[in-house]
Image (cartoon, rainbow, N blue to C red):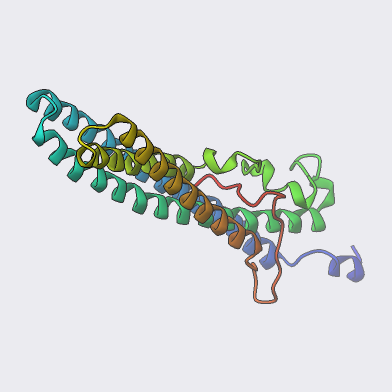
Length: 226
């Protein structure tokens, strides 16, 4: 191998740094996904246990004053837990998205320096490198993320709180309860989904390095698992 040919190959330390970074990023992605799953599971367990308790109180009090008092304490509490869970799993999802973008950049380094590996490492266009990592986009992707699932449940809890309060205020009017619950639930869901999309749009445009390099991003920025 001539000196000129040797200069075209990446230095061994660079290869070591890149492969180590790739391994670390994969581990970091696993950690963020595990945290999102764990927090969502704890939230769902809290909601399940709370609703079971509410049902027991309803049976014991025959949907009396104790039921409404307990429900107006329990449901807002669960909605608050859902709100903070939504915020954290959204943060984890954005963090995971950032790791995936950095991995996509590293894969570009592999293909640039060893193009003969393309048939074995699934060489794809830059715009598709996040999709092949399990980060698809799409119109309804907002609802398929962990944060989207938590947002829907939180909105239902907020609407249930409003409906329960409306029943008491309106002297057990079903129409008032349905209207209040639907309005509050839809408003809460719209706000949470808007916050989620804004977070994903910021994440998709954040530079990955000091020189402002953007790296690959999907056509639809809402692509994370969180």
